[in-house]
Length: 370
Image (cartoon, helix red, strand yellow):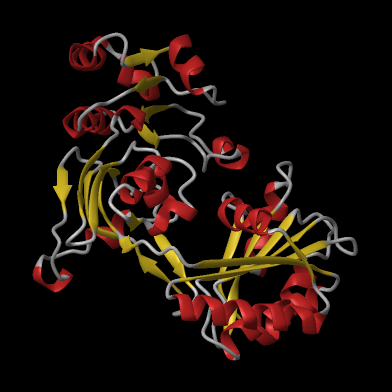
C-alpha cells in the first residue's frame, strides 16, 4: 500500500469508523459517488461536531494526507477541482454541521455553524429585523463564504470590511481553537486573519459569530446598459467623486471584445433622505451618458449573483490604468467576464473570469498581468 493510501489502513480506518459509523465515513466508490470529483477522494467524512473533524485531521496528519473541506461547493469550479491532489486526499462534507445557534438583537451579532446555508443565516437575521451583510454574496454555506470571501464590500470606505466577530476552527494538528470577541492586542495571535479568506489552508472553520446590521426598508437599485467601456468607467468613478458613495456599485462586461454587453449597477440603502437623493443623482448621471435603464429586479439579481467564482482579481487599480488593463486582458479575446467594483477616490478593483478550458500557461500570464 502506498504512503498516500496509508490513511485507509485498518489501524486508522477502523478507529474513524467507530466514531463516524459506516454512513458518515465513506471510502472507495461510495466516496467518489458522494463528491463526484476527479480525482476522487480516498474517503469522505460527514462530521457533526468539531471533535470529529479533529480526529480526521490527526489521522491525516500522521500519514501526510491532504484534507479538503467542502460545503455547498459553490466555490469549487473545474479549475480548482483539477488542482486537487492526484496522489490522494480525503474530504470533509460540512453540510451536517449546520444551524443558527443564537441571534442577539441588542449586540448585533449571530452565532452560526459553518455548514449553515447563507440563505438560512440571512433569514434568521431578518426574523429579528436585522440584516446580515454577507447575504448578498454567500451563495453556499457560511463556512465556505468565510473561507473564500471573508469580508463585505463597503463602497463608502472603498475597502473590504471584516464580517466576523469570532470564529471556532480545527487546526491541521487537530487542535480546536476559538477566538474571543475582544481587541486582538488583548488576546494574542489574530486567528481571523489566519483563517478567513485563506481557502482552508490553515484550518477548518466550524463556527462563527457574524456581525449584523439594523434592517432598513429604504432601498434604491438601478441598472443600465452602456455602449462603451470608457463611459462605464467614468460612470463608476463619478459615483464616488460627485455624491455620497452608494452601498454597492459595479460594472459588468460580458461577451467578446468588440461586442461587449456593458452593464452599470448601483445600490443605495439606508435613511430615506440618502436613498432618495442617491436615486436622483444616479438617474441624472445615467441620463448624461445615454444609458438605457432596465428593471430593478434584474439589476438586483445581477448585483447579488454576478461573478461569484471569478478566476483572478486585483487589488485597487488606479483609475488612469483601468482602461489600459482591460484592453490588455482583452488582447486574446477570451475573457468571459470583467467586473469592476469597490470604487474609491483613487481606483477600483477588477475581477476576471476566463473560459473553463483556459490553459495553465494562459492562467500564469494573466496572473502576472494583473
